[in-house]
Length: 245
Image (cartoon, rainbow, N blue to C red; front, side, top):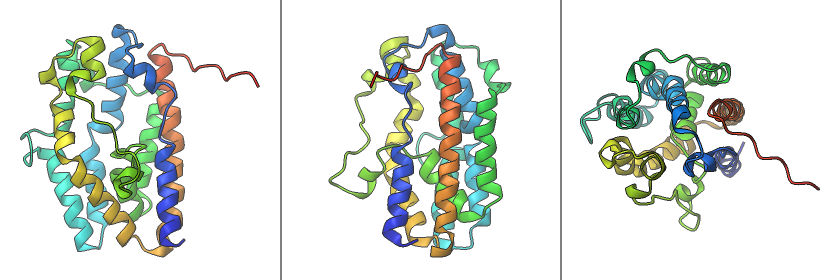
């Protein structure tokens, strides 16, 4: 697979990382008493252990330049000492804390079956297929958005960053602005992380491994969609009916 085809295949995966239920989340249509389900499943599926997933990519990688980028990302995720001085998983818990949720639930998250399948896909991608897929899945898929093309092409839309006062948790659920610590950190470091992610993947993954990486990314995307379906339904949302032909 040539460089441009590889790049386009990865961008197509990321542009498909869009879910039918997300607009309902941003409009505040999830009942407040069910919002904890979404946050718990996010935390238990990948947020709590994201540094571990990155670490798996790091220890498998034979390329010093890539390891340096992974190490910087891992250090910030695990310690937060490049920004706010707290691990990102801890900063995530400021969301439920600010919403007066029972934080003990986050220490004993019971994953939905589809959430467990998605996590299993992340575990397989980061332990069973080598550093290339582990790096692509953690830094491109998990950390990335449908706006990845804008990270590579200045003519394409970038990820929107509305004022913090317009954050859906603030507008619809009364989250204090002080509880958006993780959102603030992501805005501080995300530009460097996106640039590093694409540099690692596009400049260092060998031609012989590109097809395997794309296929692995597609598998993770499929599991992600099923996971998000299950979370949406558990939160009381229903998939919109397809328009009549």
